[in-house]
Amino acid sequence: MSVHTLEEIYTPDALEMQRRRYDETAKEFKAFFGTEHSRVFSAPGRTEVGGNHTDHNHGRVLAAGVSLDVIAMVLPTDDGIIEVKSAGFPKDTVDTSDLAVRQEELNTSAALIRGVAAGFVKNGHRIGGFKAYTVSNVLKGSGLSSSAAFEVLIGNILNGLYNDHAVSAVEIAQLSQYAENVYFGKPSGLMDQMASSVGGFITIDFADPQKPVIDQIGFDLASCGYSLCIVDTKGSHADLTPEYAAIPQEMKQIASHFGREVLGDITSAQLIAELPALREEFSDRAVLRALHFADENVRVDEEKAALTAGDVKAFFDTVKRSGRSSYMYLQNVFAASDPAHQGLSVALYIAERVLGDEGAYRVHGGGFAGTVQAFVPDARLGEFKAAMENVFGAGSCYVLSVRPFGGTEIAL
Image 1 (cartoon, rainbow, N blue to C red):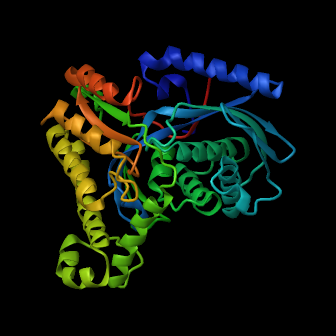
Image 2 (image 1 turned 90 degrees about the vertical axis):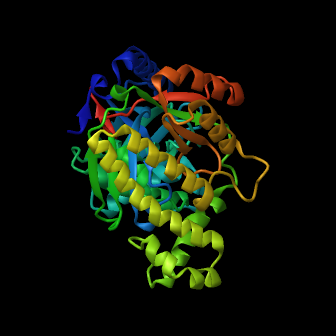
């Protein structure tokens, strides 16, 4: 099903606020474009739960769509021009008759729009023009993947307006990654787009990136007495692209020792057997990142098994082991190029101090700056939120729910 209602995708306590938000966005569309919209779309942010930096080397991840999203009021046009006005940003205009990569558009939203449209054409799908006004509450630079949500939103608009929703959620995610890699210029994996596009708790096995294996897990975190918190430490992602890019590059260096392009199904036992040779040939950091990858793949399977069995304690224990591995071996909690700023480390210390052995906490998303993730007992939620906001400011601790559906058209 490619069309959902507000009642299906938002929790009951959020419905009134969401209706006001959609009404206000509709008014903004009319004020900006001078006409009424005719269609409505939404795509969620995502939270990575397990599989930190595994997707780009054909590993496994556990992720979930969340209740923060980007929404769009849309009107199709017959001139082939895509106009997207995002609240707080200048309007982007893309002529779909020219879908070549433009160097001057690197790292811009226009590149994402052009890239998604080009991906649709590349795969034999129809495209056309439209006007859209978008509003997002997905934190930029938060590890909730605001860019992936935007890409998936554009894909769903083209899918709904011109393809009768025939393009699958998996393919929309792949075309969104294509836009980000080729047109935007960021060497991202596929996990962000896939979690946003599919929604719910999902595991993804990227052994074959063209045919990722996706399993949905019916798990209700709220019914277990825990909340998912994302803490924005207000760190800047500016100038961190080389830090992010080094992780897949170093993992692939290690894979080359085994005659592979990516680490894929290489195990920690294989890596340890070759440890002396690997250390001689490559940096210790590259070796440690490869060891993290191998162990993290196993942890994703353990987390999936724990959630499927409803064993919350085992799940949280594995989440914490994932967090420690990211800190010690993947080394993406702070940037080696900027050791003076370690907001994520500070947040993890506070989480450990407040929660102790309860719940779990870890670096969230790409790392280096941005956010940490915590699973907090409802009885400790007030204390946890207050402790984080005392350090990082009011509104820095977001209490989220898992959204059961990914990118979709909305029936109002």
